Length: 80
Image 1 (cartoon, rainbow, N blue to C red):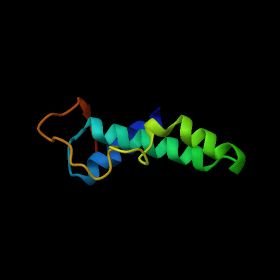
Image 2: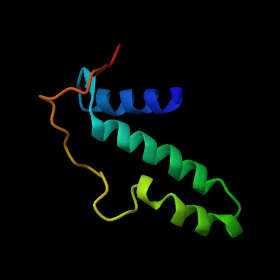
Image 3: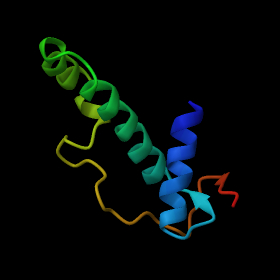
């Protein structure tokens, strides 16, 4: 959980935002899931990729380089 928060804060900092948006958190979850699936044995990788497809960036309609609405902070502040 802590790593997902740190990754989402990093995405927010890359956008030069003071707050993490829902898109930042979604991207952080996708990075964590992609990393987990990628580290598995080849025999398990396809099944895990299908099971976690809705959480990854490989699914249709996923958050890729979409700009989040900066005027609506989600309440998670980014500290320097």
